[in-house]
Amino acid sequence: IHGFADGEKRIERALDEVGLGNGFRFRYAHQLSGGQRQRVAIARALILEPSILLLDEPTSALDASVQAEVLNLLEEVRRRRKLTFLMVSHDLAIITHMCERLMVMQNGEAVETLTASQLIGHRVSEDYTRNLLRASEGFVRA
Image (cartoon, rainbow, N blue to C red; front, side):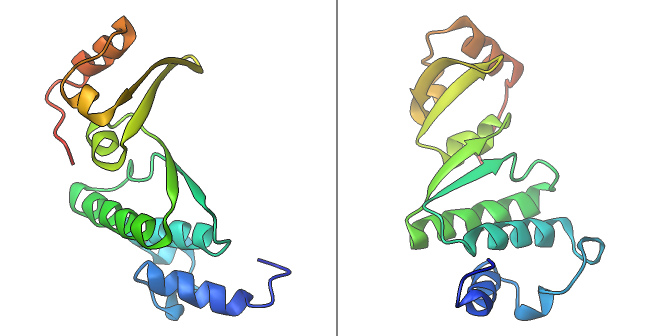
């Protein structure tokens, strides 16, 4: 944020937006819970006021209740800031909850592009996607 005239205000605004006060600004990672660390990571991204956020496994290290809090926060931030998310995850429940469209990838190549409703309804055309769904049998939408 170096070079922004309003850097201090951006930091305070971002921390407030993710539900952390300015008191969290100078805490170390070991002083924070997993959910708080995730909120700090989101705040750090928001400081730059992006139009797109890359979310790489944003809830993978969190327990279910904290996952829900972080997902709700992300939804609120997306709505308020009109953001686009590019989400990377192996968790089909999270993907179908957070994404309208998705792309299944194998070895760095796009295998299939579909909607969340197609995935939920198992209306897929590629064997790799079918195998992914089978491996995730019983996934519950978040």
